Image 1 (cartoon, helix red, strand yellow):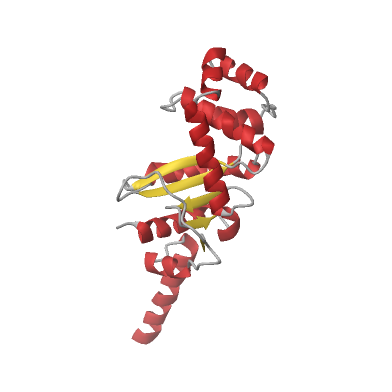
Image 2 (cartoon, one colour):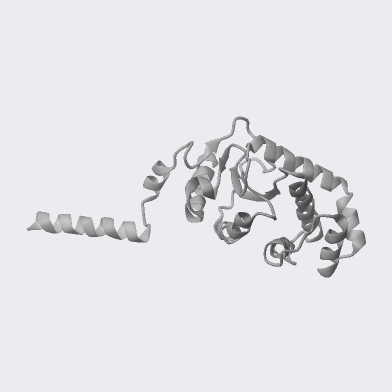
Length: 217
């Protein structure tokens, strides 16, 4: 009788774990396989994180609906990320249009350095929800002046040395990551993963957490 009860309890616990997703962390880690859930990059991308920190990069494009839908997951990650994680958004530059949207991102970043005006989110919403086309300097200037910035501020950001430096960084990350689509997450310049690789956004967070722990010293 005791044996039967034990087996019954064991079955019930297994079923509970399956339903709730409460799988022990060690089991989760064992399920994450190189080549399936992530890939190791052929050459390490130089990071901009300080010694002892782990850099996590979101490689994205404003014109990508999948990148837009990933934003709540990114925000979830940011709300719970470990103190040793340095997060960066890096715009992909796979085509001239993507490259211009990279400039759009960096102008927004320079004008809204503390993120208080939610410029990044508003750009995404403008392109994805409002279907606006911001593909030239005139359209960009009009967009940012609507947000309360001046045309001179936009022009200054576009022509700045900071812009050249950040665009060079974006191209380096894009090329060395070997990414041919977005969104992509790059951990510490060594590993690349994505929602399409792992199957779901929730699993993506688990894989990123796993890779961050591997790189934590």
